[in-house]
Image 1 (tube, rainbow, N blue to C red):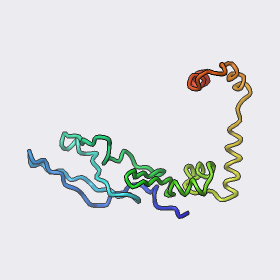
Image 2: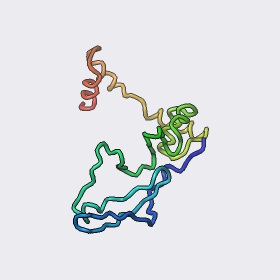
Image 3: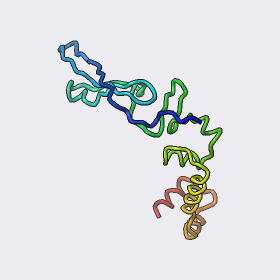
Length: 154
């Protein structure tokens, strides 16, 4: 698998877009930012402060809500990347623990890294005996959400 560039932060391009209020003639320059994947974006953080207006984008169809170094999604194109790797490649060629390592460490593990990671995770997944007794106190047909709430609240 070839790791793409997803995960690099969005950076200023030096370009701007000028927004003109035709009612007042006031012009506001908004910086254009570029990421490693996908279209360039207009940084509108100053829009309200400079114009007193908000944007309106029902369903957030043209809005990037955050800058992610982990995931890139383009639903219209059917693209989902984790750390630059297409999700279908990860599903075919990597197991769950390899993907966990990738998300945490920004790269797929080598064999020795994976072995150490699996050992560390396994050592932290033991369920204390007292907790198993606690679970036994629930009815066999109890709703899983009720069990979870009870265990977390205990």
